[in-house]
Length: 125
Image (tube, rainbow, N blue to C red; front, side, top):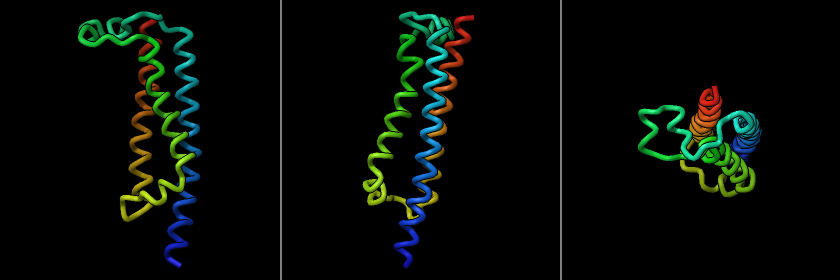
């Protein structure tokens, strides 16, 4: 009975996490596409965003705007396609804690994606 309840908790949490990660991925891609329409397309956008700190690492506009949404999309496809692998690879004793940790990491990547898109938009101004 406890194993069935645990699997039901996993299914419920996985479904909620997949949905919310899909929404976050869509929003990140929409923001990145909007920023791509208005951002300056240069070889080194970091020099435009922060002239002092941007000189040590060169990053093009394409990789600056689209890297984090691509990571989110890859994570979303991975968790949807690898549901049963995730169920078997549970590392923490509580499923809710494991999904909460994954949500914190996903939110961090989502925040970076939006932050980079907004920084690219402000570089255009």
